Image 1: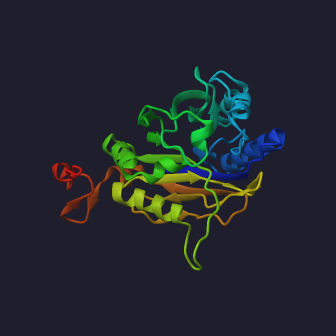
Image 2: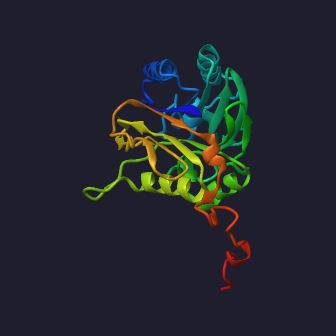
Length: 273
């Protein structure tokens, strides 16, 4: 059993110190509640709504930069795992929208977002490596970033690679949601958990930034697709839940079926046009 936390915070691209304090406070609350794994939003320290590539480059950092040191200190001081989005400096003309996984102060993996959303294509370079399945002291974990989670092939590949937990720092832009419905991103995250029998933790952000409103619908889903916590309701919060990783390894669906073994990949090829 692993206690996980999704920290939903207000991030302000124009107030980095306030943002950093909000992130630190959320991790502290999660730690006090016994969390072993803490997930923070996409681009957690820099904000998202960059005016242009030049501004993003000005905020970008290398892995040895102060932002990652800040996350490492949070992780090491509290003896837990931190998953956080960051703006990564590249050797090219654009930075990467990345995520780092830090286990008790030690970086155990990074991933660069491969599926860019909206204006991200004008600001960031897309990663060209599949999300890793990281062997950690808590289990097998795959980090994704926001829009990545909406591609069934991505989550399926992680599940086939043995991932037990999918962790997804996110910035979900607020859209129109019919009365009585949940944001479609929430439904997709639950579906991803259910069809692959994996736990899914999404840390969204809340509030607004340079005219962009955020959904603020962080969630924690069990491997059956049902919510263990959330979706959050648009305010700062720390969601907590206990996930049994044995359930995430068990792909059985009743007496006769298996979520992965029942696949027939030779039937799933794209049709000839």
